[in-house]
Image (cartoon, rainbow, N blue to C red; front, top):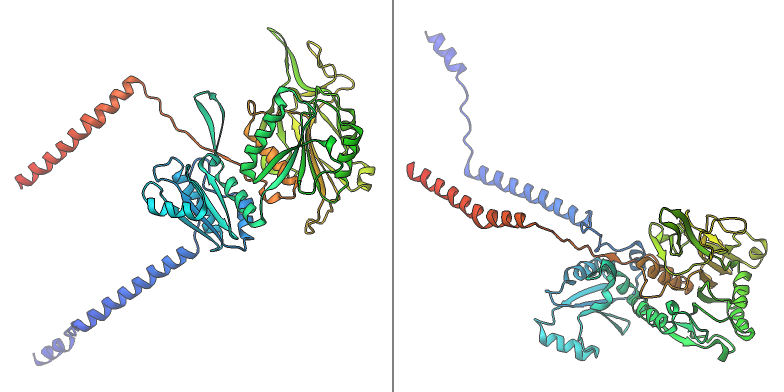
Length: 498
């Protein structure tokens, strides 16, 4: 019995050690410290390494690659003040857009917000300091001691839509802000001269084109002024380019000499919007010498239908994906109103290569269109002498360019379009406006501004029938509250019963 007792005593389990309060406290502290380190580390990593995604339907808050590239090279401090009421329909868009500028601006861009309806005293201080009346809300930019105010009207573009009461709205805040920044940092706006005194048909009326250019200039930071070629011996040095819009009458010999001398300069820029109905042999001769020959035909589409012959002169067109000027528009399609003539391009010409002139197509008609010489026929058909696809409608020519893109040199550039209606506000389409803006920017070697296109502002409209409206009323006003009341009563009854 004694051995058994001894054995049982030897096999008895060792009593567990009871944790002390100090041990418990240390364990809790270690767990808390470990949790803080883990969550702190996760927050630090998420702050430094994260991904952003614009979930808006049209990507309205996403900056284009042109703007982000421009901001990466920013070296001067910029102040942006959003002067806009929180109740404005553009407020959320402008706030998200300016925050993207601040985020990409390498800490050189400071963004501030001012609600003129709430902070009246500060608004008066801004008025006194800037000299602005602030009759319209907008965005105030400051850099290098210069200021530029973008009012709210410059942040949107309204174009005719299928419903006259509901135009198409495009947001162009990025284009406006980047252009304004470039103007502030480079020292002022550019100047283009619009050639006057040569007549024009209604779609290319001089005053209409000048107004359209000035509206576009507000967005792109340039201004346009008229000029009479017959009254000058040379294009003024303060001009950054010439614009020929729908000339009805030809150049004189002296005017042709002015244009040729301007082209021979180290740097020049010209935009030609040609009227196919006009006879301008001297102008055509100059354009042919740089590799772009207007053919004097009409680009059209014709077919025989059950209701009779159908001839369409308005041209559906697409843009080149190879040219720097139109690369941002490569997925866009447009329509040229009125009449359009095709262009004969000398794309691989030895004499042009010797003169360092490069010709690049920019716009071509859709494959069903052709260039018809006998366009007055009731039902024309493509035959000998007509131009079949590809039918070029616009092209660029550059003199003095070099193949090494790393070297920036001044060149002479021109853009030719076989249509004169691109700036007609009655038929102005968004892609055509972007094309003109890109052409002007390319002419003055401001490629960084090309590719910033306005974004459509989506409008959502829900159409409900009378039965659907009744259903919404019963669900929200009757069934919903009754269901909540019933659930509450059930909970109350169950608690009373227990």
